[in-house]
Length: 164
Length: 298
Image (tube, rainbow over all chains, first blue to last red; front, top):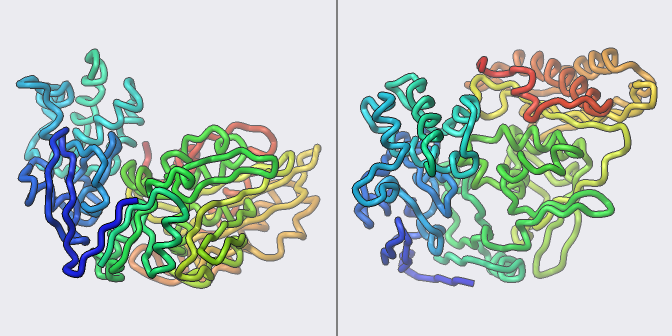
């Protein structure tokens, strides 16, 4: 059991973000998104609706998609957090990033990090999803530019890349 | 102010005896607090790492599901798909992949929303919850658990640890569907679940039907004993009429009371039809909403 009790309402926790341990001093009610952006300093994860609807803030927690705007940062201790900054291998884009560029699945780009995180979780579960399965996998991510067609095509294109 | 991460049920109920509130995925608690619906509790105990709450056990009496099991596990669990299809139908419709990954059956039940998706199928399947505290444990039928919107008969120190669903009768089937305007991040406008038992000739032996988002809690439709011996189409139509008549919905941003009363009858009729098809051995894909094309066209 991990027991943290404070009179001030702040907690010292260590967050594992993209394999790096970040000690942070945070309030109980801080959401994971604000800690990733404000304390850890990784701003690739976006704040869209801030209401668990749009998916711009999607990160992976132990490999599963989570809306970080509505998840308590203190609850993430001991879990592996993956953000968009953690998906490249060295200087090489992740196949999903490359496929989004190739398919023209990025316009303003604000939804793109969250889309990639959801798509990564989908492909980890289902390496060759149908179009319908991609749409379900991305159903918690809103895009206001592209109309989704090219994003869905990009995920299927990435799925065809070995080891995507 | 405190935040405890429990790894055993004993740790969790001890924290709750000291006034802590449980948090699993936080999809209701945290979002609700951020909306200003209810402040985040001062003392929290995280229960999402208690292994004993993450089990799905096939038992001699039925199935036992740990309260921490997520909707994403339930929507694709082979045991549920075959024998408790209505619950799989509901679990597959909750929120988005992220919501289903974090959200749990125990959280859905104890949050006690009248629009909750898993409530109606659990009710028609005769589910009970097991509540545990430092004082002991007890089983409560779901029909006695919900007392109003967001309210249950559980004491503040009682943790929902298990959901018990009895083995379905032979030639029975269950189904859940809801009216929705979009296919993701949606809440039931109205919904209905049915469990239907057929005889060898395909006539109704018994049926139970529960309704979503048309009353302060999930409700059972009364007066279905008269369906015994009816054929399925006739039973489905009669259930639809009874459901619409017993609904007491409100008007809000998502639908008027009049529209809800009408559509819950339609949902109830279709739930009976689908449950009867499953009872007869037909394969009806999960979730039923997608199988029959409710919501936006795919």
